Image (cartoon, rainbow, N blue to C red; front, side, top):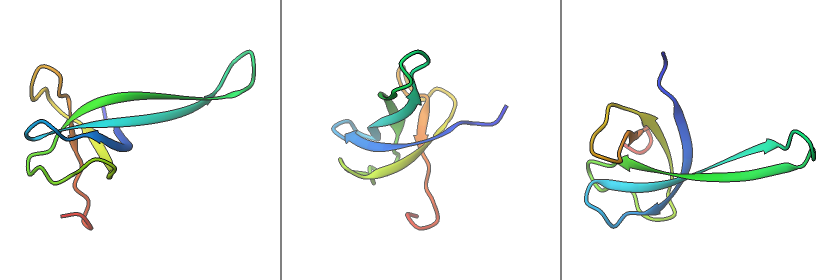
Length: 80
């Protein structure tokens, strides 16, 4: 099964090698037919402490790194 990739904004970088990423998704309500925005926070592994609050990042699924971290920040060619 392919690994999921999500895009979001860093909302927290207090912990060492960890960032909190808020990912927003939009969908149409099945009854009201209104566009709804929902967001969810993910804890992602950032080995180099490279990303700061407000940065736009992509995260990819990985094996569990700690109790709450199952994602890691994806380093694109431009950022590396």
